Image (cartoon, rainbow, N blue to C red):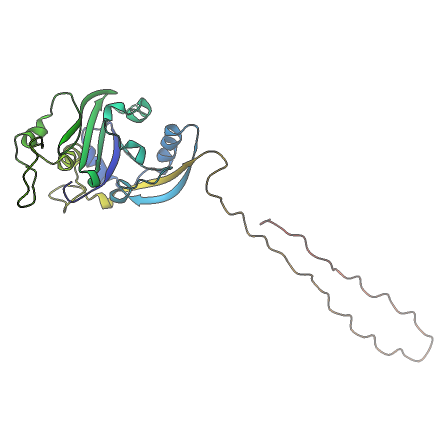
Length: 267
């Protein structure tokens, strides 16, 4: 992620090829997303805020928000509370809120050159890495096969001309390392132009939610009140002049259907 992608995501996967599932179903299931939001925040209310491209939602960090995409066999959650220095400290409610077999975590912050990734199988942590270029926060489990080129120096850190590298520097950039995990597990990168069969994260949609205590969320405007002005009846036409003869008793004027109509609320 050398060009500065900001990412904070956790994925729940129950299919052998999550990239194929994402390519075939880029639109999420709203009902499943709503159910998971309620499960992740059982004491709060999750109010939908609308769809957002994954490429944008992955970097949002507004407090009290979460974005969820539920696809066949694959679910992603994007939220600011996921960006932690040590992935092993994430609570069980975040690691496995579903019965899906695998959980993948990918996060990065360009402002501090930090990158991180982790994998759980059936809820058990099997690999976790988190670091800045000169400080490793966490390195648990055996390195995976796809990591070999990074540790071998095939993706070295690039330093400005005349700047000596720190002797404790890693042989790769942690953000690029995290990008490699995302590509290996999910079939796409957040940076650069998609290559080959890679997915463009701009084409994947997730659904946003505001999470808040009951009664404290965004107000939903009630139906507009409609007030009808007083309806006036036309004045009665003047009676014709009476014919010569006995004086007729004038008929009483018609009753007025007047008064203000009551306010109504759409019924």
